[in-house]
Length: 457
Image 1 (cartoon, rainbow, N blue to C red):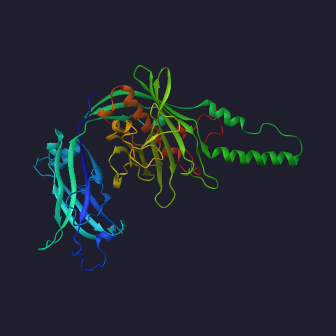
Image 2 (spheres, one colour; image 1 turned 30 degrees about the vertical axis):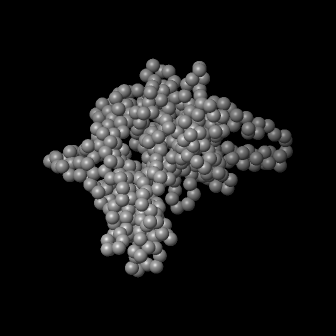
Image 3 (cartoon, rainbow, N blue to C red; image 1 turned 90 degrees about the vertical axis):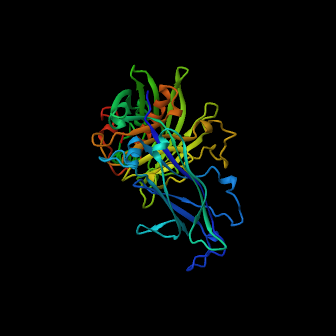
C-alpha cells in the first residue's frame, strides 16, 4: 500500500510575558491576574483557540514544564499545500500562507462572532509549507516582541511553529457502514479496493429481548387489561434501546481482519429520549488473534445535553496486558449532530478548536499523570494517529457522504492494523445513529426484518 503525502503543522509552547508597568490604558486588570487566550488562524482553515499561560517578567526562559504543550494542529493534504502555496491555480505563484495569532486577555468566549476578551497583540507569520513536504521545518521557536515597545520594557509572546511530513494511508467507504460497503484505498485519483464490510444484528440479543416479554396470562378482563398494560410499558421500555449492532471488516479473500461490536446497548435515560453521558453505549473494537477475537479498543458514545446538540465520545486503547476494565484514553471530545465533523486521534492537540478534534489524554483511566513511563503503549500513539470524517445526523445510506479515514503510516505494519482503524471509524459513524433521539425513527438499513425481531427499533 502506498501512502498519501500530508503535512502536519503545529503551534505550541505558548506563553505571554508582560511587564507590570505595561497595563492596558482602559483596564485596571493586568493579564497576570486574568486568563489569557489566543485565536489561531491559517488562511481559510477552521479557527482554533487555546489558553495562553502568563510568565512573570523576570523569567529568562520558557519553563520546561510546558515544553510539550500544543495549542493547535493543522492537517494538510497535498491539495491543501498546493492551494496554500499557489501551485494549484491557473497561474502558479510563489505566495506563502500566513499564520495569524490574536492574543486576548479575559475569559474565553464570543458575542455575535466578536471575541469577548481585550486584544493584547497580533502576530502574523509567513510559512514556507512547500519545504515541509520533504523535511521538518521549524518556522519559529522563541520569544517575539509584541505590543508597544517602551524604553524600559516590552511585552513578549513565546511560541513554537513547525511543520513536518506526515504520510498517511487514506481509505474511503463506498457507502454508509450499515449498507455493508466496500472500502477503497485512495491515492490521488487511484481507488483500489482493500476491504469489504458486513453489517449485521446479533441474533442472541434479539432472542434474549423477545424472551423478556410476557407470553401468557390468566383469565379475567381485569387481568387481561393489566397484562396488556404491562405489555405496552414493556414495549415502550424495549423500544427505547438499540443493541446488537455489529460490523465486520474482511480482506479481499473474505477473511475477517477486524470488527466492531456493540457490547453495551444505547439506552434512553429515564424520562427522556436520549442516550445520556452517565449511561453511554459502548463498542468493542476487535482484532483476530490466536483463533479468536481480542479486544483492541473501547468506544463509548452518548448525546450531549444543552444548546450545542452533539455526540460525545471517548475512545480507549485496551493494552494486551491490561484487564478488561483498564484502558488508555486516546480521544475524548464531541461532534456536532447537525454539521458532522472529524474524529481525530492526535497525541498533542490539546485544544480541539474549531475542527472538532479529539482531546487525547494518553494516560491510564483515573490517573492524573501522562503515564509515559508507566504505559509504553503511549509512545506508539504519539503525534497524529488517525482521522475520520463523520456525517451529520439525518442522512440516509444513499445520500450520506462516505466516511473517509486517514491513518498514519507509523500505525500500519500489516493489513490488520489498518482494518482496526477502519472498524473504529465505522463504529463512530454508526454511533451517530445509535444516539439519535428515540422519538425519531431510524432508517431501514438499521432495522432488522420484522420476521426476525418486531421489537428492534
